[in-house]
Image (cartoon, rainbow, N blue to C red; front, side, top):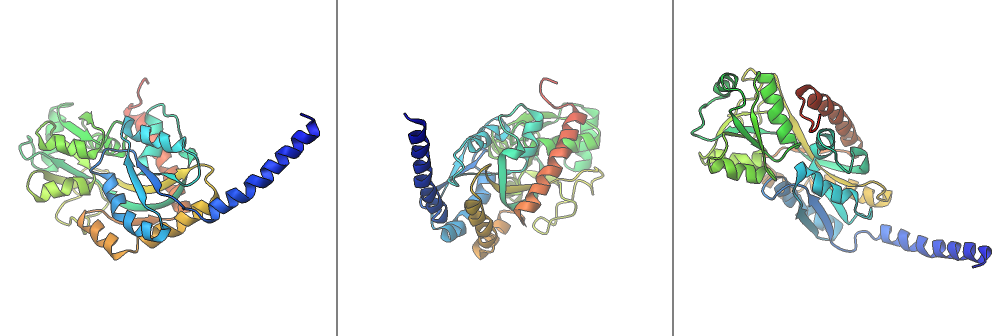
Amino acid sequence: MNPIRRCASALILIATLAPAAAFAQANYPIRPIRVIVPYAPGGTDQQLRLLAQPLEKILGQPLVIDNVAGAGAAIGTALVKNARPDGYTLLYAGTGALTVVPNLNNTPYAAGDFVPLGNVIGTPYVVAARPDAPFRTLAEMVAYGRANPGKITCGSAGHGTSTHMAAEAMAAAAGFRLLHVPYQGIGPAVTSILGGNIDMVVGLPNAVMPHVTAGKLNALAITAPRRSELMPEIMTVREGGVAMEDVTKFALFAPKNTPVAIQQKWVAAVPEAMKSPEFNEATRRSFNSIMYLSPAQLRGVVAAEDKHFRQLIKDLKLREGV
């Protein structure tokens, strides 16, 4: 083709596509939105399901919540990173999926491959043991762990997840090593401890506390800096003499290069949906603490966590192949 004609054709194509792209962004969303949760059902996805209804009312389209577990959240997170940045495939995950996993393993993504849309939940973990474990309190657990290094089996949501890091950090601060048992999500880890397969679990309150209330698990402590008003009877790890705390965040992210106009629709929708009385009541009943963070605040949290976990993983020599 003549170079002049080729250039003219390209300009015509650009002129044709530009209005279409602008129209799509202005009218977003026009179809269901897939939100990937990179863990097995029964934990983090429950948070999003509580928020889905008010979000759907605001956005006018349903959310299709898709649990894609594996590799400590890396599989589902990578799917979102590689998705078309058009606002129809998003990520709902703990910040550890972006700040722990890439520092622990070789992942096909980094924190910079995502743009934050807003944080929804900020919650401590519950440290719980099976009722017939050889310890009944946090102090007894620490004493047993020191006397029996590597013998306490502790389940988490997967290798490299924030639950894994919380367990390792707690044990390190207490002066012993535990035997980490990774699962494909906190739901399967809780199912395993209920079956008597492991001694202890460090997990989300909504996955652990119903079983504590039912007497099927024994809550030793929470990883909050102070006692939670939702679980006031449970002491903090620090109260138990272990200098450690961890409040994990769960947020919505979009692939890098998602148009700003689409990002802004979510930036406006998330805090508005979080005002829903139904969401607030259901979240409290599930022992989760609501914590909104703007994209700028969330970006700062991710950067700080990335630095913190990089050093923690180095200090504990947890990185595979190193």
